[in-house]
Image (cartoon, rainbow, N blue to C red):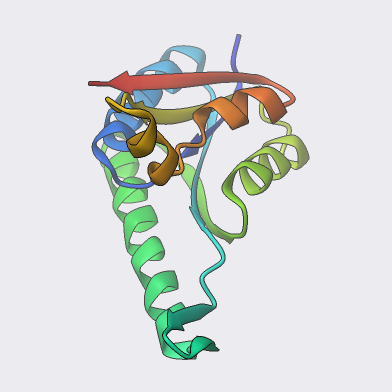
Length: 145
């Protein structure tokens, strides 16, 4: 069935549930498992005078995403998995689908939280719908309410 699984992990409630579900799926399929944390482009900070490049801000963001990834890797290692992980920078759907394609994944797993109104959905930047449209392989959305 699924032998090479990529989990897009952000440490959120839905991401943590996706990690739990992914462990079970990977265990039963004896699958290779990769964990990704995708940091959107955030090279500048906007202010009243415009945007400026702030290297310290980017370094803090990379460190934050690395900590989220490391936490997910630790949880998987504690469950007996040998797993690879990577922090990617860019547009999340593009980064996840490119990684999955180039690494031969046949399943992408992502968490998703239903939001009550269109404004919340728009501001949240949820990627699961776009991911389904652009992925070359199956996508499993783990839903939390």
